[in-house]
Each structure stands twice: as structure tokens, then as C-alpha cells.
Image (cartoon, rainbow, N blue to C red; front, top):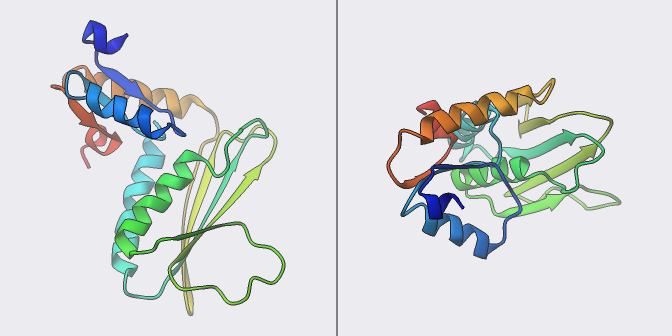
Length: 178
């Protein structure tokens, strides 16, 4: 509908098929689109912090774990936002392996692995903790939504931004000027 009417678009959907992603990319040649897994301003700033930390730790043999918590009704695990955190970190650190939870006796942790852990409880609107663990010290970045209003605030910021743009594919870094 937006493409046919030449109306700018904000997309905050994850779990898209490769075909759907390609449709968004093609549409961006004609209309401006902001596409991000989360509209939360705090989440997107934390993604930038995680990217900087991962870049600084790329050659420091740091372990990475991503723990995300959402309400009991959330259907995907890990969340699209957690996966985006992992993609950003992996790109900086050259890590490729992803492990979803651990149990039993998995043995020593392999080098280059990013662990994902999904928790589903109550009505938690969203929380992500990124752990960079080295021998002797640990860095934790946590971003937490106390209610869903933050997603609306970010979506409105994205809508105001995209309304002034020429055709192209934008993300929340563009909206935030990062």
C-alpha cells in the first residue's frame, strides 16, 4: 500500500522471510523506509554501545552471552532484537557460532561462540543483557523497558525522520544520528 501510494514506511518487524526482506529492499528504491528490529531509542543506543565494545574486545578473547527477557506471550525465541545484537557483535568480533541455551555437559566453551538465552515471564515488555566476559573482568550492558511506551516514542521519531527523507533504506542509527 505504501509503495503504491508513495508513502514513507516504518517497519519494526522481525522474522521476515528472505523474500519479504527483498521486497523491503526493492521498495526502498522508490520510497524511504526505516527498518529496525526495535523502535526503542534505548535499545538502539545500547546496540551502538555493544558494537563499540565488541570492536574494542575483538582480539581480547572475550566470551559473549546475550540474555533476553520478554512477556510470556512472546512467540519467538530468541527475540529479533537479541539476534540483531548478536549480528552486530559477531560482525565486529569475527564470531560465527551461535548457541541457544546450554544444558547437560557441553564441555568447555568453544572460542568464537555467542550464547543466546531467552526467558519468558509475566508481562515483561523487554529486557536485553549483553555480557562480554574475559578472564578476570566482565562488562554487562543492560537495556530494560518498564512499559511499551518507549516503542511508540521511537516509532514516532522514526516516522518524523522518514517523512523528510528521499527514497532509501534507513535504520534507527540514521534516526538517532549515530
